[in-house]
Image 1 (tube, rainbow over the protein chains, first blue to last red):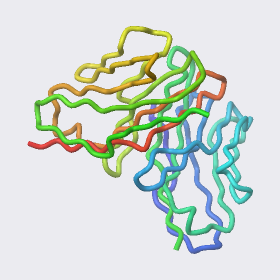
Image 2: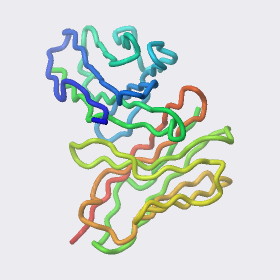
Image 3: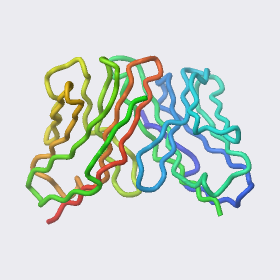
Length: 115
Length: 115
């Protein structure tokens, strides 16, 4: 068990560019979550997957954001036409089978800076 | 929608002393989970302790314990014998018990431990 990993850890981009982040959950975990955390605030839910199905999306997830989880393994989060307001830490978390299926294990996050 | 409020943006404690971090939440559900997470500066968020709402007994994990008052919707964290390594941002989180299982976070409390 190597934990949840995310790549890259840091991304600096210019406004208007597209960026893609990757999350690898703990191997046996079937649920995967994306959160966004801005400075001085707690994480805010963006979307979640059960296996390969995206089952819920927050209203925070504008149409510039898209997430996928092909084959129910790793997940990607893409932001198109980035804006300065997208600057934040993007956290991925996964949960596994009972008895602790509601405990989320977080990755280290990807810090995005949009110039 | 559920909300989580942490009314103490910052707290400090002397090493070896005890400190209590406050958290209140709002929900209309009867079955849910509550969590405290620790996020050291520039490091990964890790679970400190979790509480199932259907359990009356307060959860404990070594030096960490909670005071769960379901009727009052209060969920405080007590850290005993504080150590320098306890310095971090602490987030209280509400976890729903549906298939989504997503979490709603408070805005955090920054804990400083003084030697």
